[in-house]
Length: 361
Image (cartoon, rainbow, N blue to C red; front, side):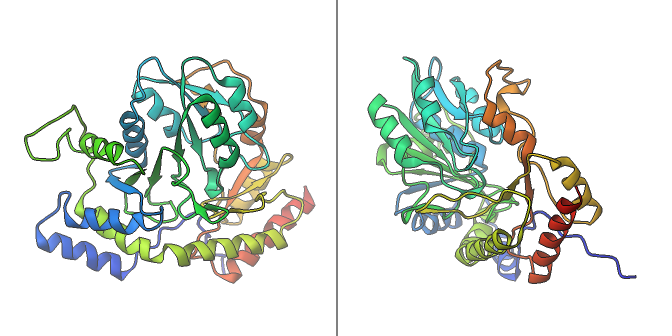
């Protein structure tokens, strides 16, 4: 009897063009930040309404750079969701500010605007929004709140390349945005991130922060980091970006198949006017989530819980706040494969197995 192949939860797609691009850089001998990085920034800018783009070495570096360029630091509070990856809150702490954790909307898994209002104090400087799993947060309401209370808005768009609200791309709503190009993201540069600004002055500050505080060599204007992206990573990013729209459509088509095929689980909710890019296709399984995951593992179908722990309960933060929707999400979410390398047979196998398991539980 032929054994079923393993269907991976995520699978980076690196082709011959990426390999040739890297080889070209290696042969050139120019490996540090240079023309490839500049070209990557220009190419990415076209997808965020021609805003300034500053390439860095990770999504976390992008968040830290965005916060510091905006002047957020010691004594400031930044409102963040607790249902996210820890980097969202880590970045706030790393600049000396205090992350204030708020609850999510359990239908979208994104930060709940009404909870933001309840958490604003005299020390609040900003709202750091996460477009979780590739679904934009409710930026209409969030921007209204930010305007009313004179708050900055940072978009953590690490999982949401090309996601949109009414045709407007994420990364263009707030005062700053950060994207990630980690290997499992919708596109990769192996490692890397991108900071996005509309303001010329803030963009220049971000470039200084990225490169030891200098634009010209040995003319350090401010204390800075080595957050530079290498030419190798940028070369990969350029080629990946060319494929991103095609891959995004494929993810959306795979998600549509699941929406129509899956039974006895709650599939992702996408508000009208919002375009989900499905970095993760995440089920809500309030009963038997762990049993379902176990059975899928036995069937060699990749799956994972993003995220099993409320960030504010991690030892690094250890807050006593009660966030019921966030807690419910940690107990009930399960992500299944949705990446572009899936074939129709894979999609059918995954959905059939989930339906079979759930009908037996």
